[in-house]
Amino acid sequence: MLLIPCPWCGPRNQIEFTYGGDATVRRPALDAPEGEWFRYVYIRDNPMGPHDEWWTHSAGCRQWFVVSRDTRTHEILGSAAPNQTPGPTTR
Amino acid sequence: MIEKGWLGGGNTGRNTTIVRSNYHLDPNAHFYELSLKLWEKLSQALNFNVMYSARGVLNLVHSPADLDAAMRRGNAMRLNGIDAKFMTREAIARWIPNLDCSPDARFPILGGLLQPRGGTVRHDAVAWGYARAADALGVDIIQQCAVTGIRIDGGAIAGIETTQGFIAADKVGLAVAGHSGHVAAMAGLKLPIESHVLQAMVSEPVKPVLDTVVTSGAVHFYISQSDKGELVMGGDLDFYNSYAQRGNLPIIEHVVSACLALFPSFGRLKMMRMWGGIMDMTMDGSPIIGKLPVQGLYMTGGWCYGGFKATPASGYCLAHTIARDEPHPLNAAFTLERFAEGRMIDEKGAGPYAWAH
Image 1 (cartoon, each protein chain N blue to C red):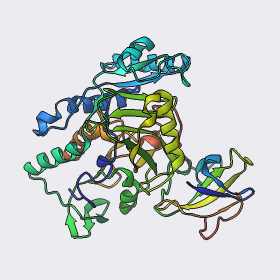
Image 2: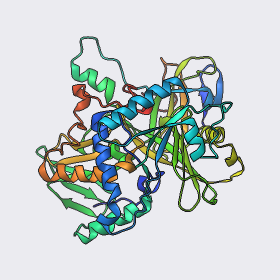
Image 3: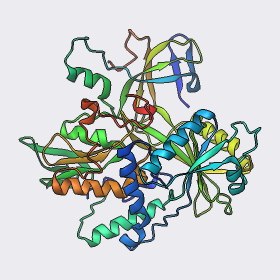
Image 4: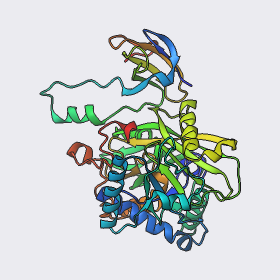
């Protein structure tokens, strides 16, 4: 069971949350070259280790936030509001 | 053949042994149908009993929308020369008496789409049979030897670094399932792939109670009975990136509740084991089989959660691609470039979210 620390509601059971994927990708400028848009839509780092990722507290406060979690162990390293850095890893 | 662990110790030994070719889109349909045709003759081809059992794969239909989708898929399969048969609720109830087909079931069953030639194959026997046949043909199988690097010289492959030293090669094929992205990164490549964990579990062994494979997309569940008597079941991904080969309890609870909604009589069974496997989930849910942007480097991967049934066709098409340096017609659509070119093969129409397929 993942105990996910919602920055607003505190640690809650994973069944209250919905996953939103890699939080490090950044939307390119509208006039960015096609290659940049391709990488934004399809290419992911898929790291073996700390992964910054979107979660939403869908059965709670409904806020989106960023969780840093180790993909090898599922250990949660920190969480933060979308405009902040989640715990010990940087994004 | 360089293997980090031992033969059959990866996803080959962790899957739920189902084989089928009940796909809607042409590239998938023809590719997996080649695979199913190879499965049918594999015991003879390898001179090793892989225990192919054409017990049928039945997709249950629970709603009018399910019914439309099943008819559409069944018609597409038949147009592609693949066996598909619609079964009414009454016919299913006669065939599978312990399946709750009553109108007051939690998820009432309206019918089902059956692929009679689908079924199961003994997964460990597939690994051992292929290994023995490859060994007899002169393939060196080196176990307990991890690939630690890929050496590239002037845009072409030069060989691989391993824990037992460098091996020079002018052609290298990657077939590492959940670790496709990790190994491709050794060649400086980033793939449209995320690794996710998929769980499965088995009950204690019991006498024969289920002689087909039953799946339900609506409740995210599938089940079959192994020759040892265990009920083998599974459902969805855990839905977050993982390399951990183990998942979490909410999915197990989901799978078991779906099982009991469909098969109330299984409620007294004890579960014996559960485990997870790492899936290389692509952004369109279909595999990548072909040339990579390094001369002499090839891959077969991105299997999402359907790699086992593809085993014979995956090997066939990768071997063809490596030998000719061009894809076989049946894997020509499964290029890495299709994502940049907008030629997605998205069976579910789920869009570029790896865990949604």
